[in-house]
Amino acid sequence: MLLAPVVAAWDLGKGELQVLSLALKNSDCAAIVDNRAARHCGQVLGIIAIRTGGLLILAKRRGLIPSISPGIQALRDAGL
Image 1 (cartoon, rainbow, N blue to C red):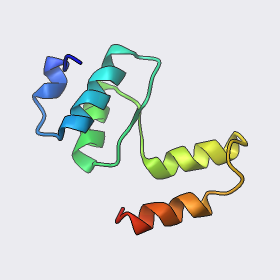
Image 2 (cartoon, helix red, strand yellow):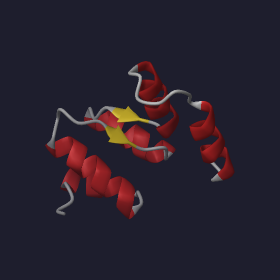
Image 3 (cartoon, rainbow, N blue to C red):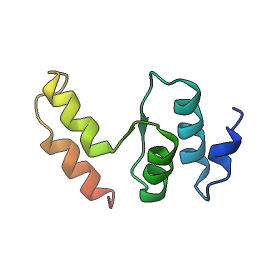
């Protein structure tokens, strides 16, 4: 995947760069990023950025998962 030059200028990890480049090219998409610098990059570039915890809440509200507790615990167990 080609990185958007405006995103590549940020000092981010490879995964964050790819996710934000994809979201920038597809304005109807949001980027799921937890890294603070990546969220800031998204904000500056007008990209909607959602943290993993926010994604769990959205899934719960839409009835896709019965509870956010297992997901939150998994995030904690992973060190987030």
